[in-house]
Image 1 (cartoon, helix red, strand yellow):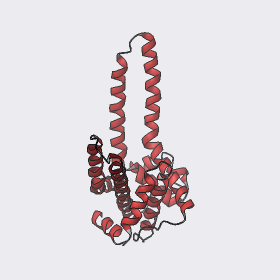
Image 2 (cartoon, rainbow, N blue to C red):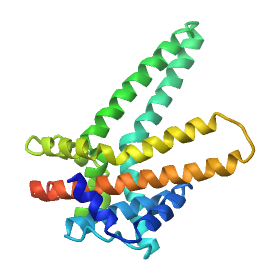
Image 3 (cartoon, rainbow, N blue to C red):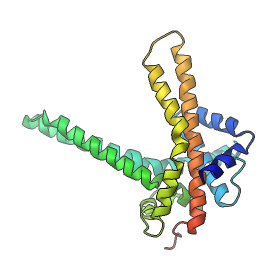
Image 4 (cartoon, helix red, strand yellow):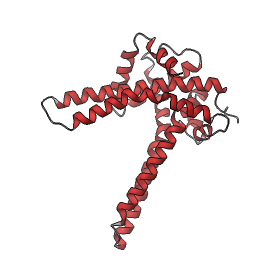
Length: 236
């Protein structure tokens, strides 16, 4: 599946141009939904039997709307728990400071951070985000995608093994992103003439590599959905 997904991406002669445009858009918070919309459209095309070429940069308004819904799925499962944990920590920390046991706040922060890290790893390997995008592409409506349905689908007894295999197979797709991210962090530790142009270039390439990985993942999960007969229908 991984080789097929790579082949589908690279059969598009303009794949690198489309991904670099998406990476540039991802450099801004407001532009991120455009890239997320591209991933969902590519996933939907793969489900329909048209995995290549990548969708062109057209119909910007529709793509942005799709990307907003896809981003909300990620927000629900990845960012919202952090926001809740931060609010909980501040409430607890204030109570500890008032009661004179402020030193314990660091221990609470470490415990919360550890629990959230474990949660993030579990959610990542369950593939909740790509499954949510599959549901979004299947329904063309955000209600089920932004509910607990992606989590229930990832844990469905007859298909959870297939989804886990899809996630493990897709891990090499993130290797360029990981390498560029590491390089960006290393370069960011040094100050020299021309630091900012180089950092901006590295950030652009890093986000482009992230989009590249997400497109590979989208194709793998779309092929997985075909192999298991589809996600749970809306009336189930």
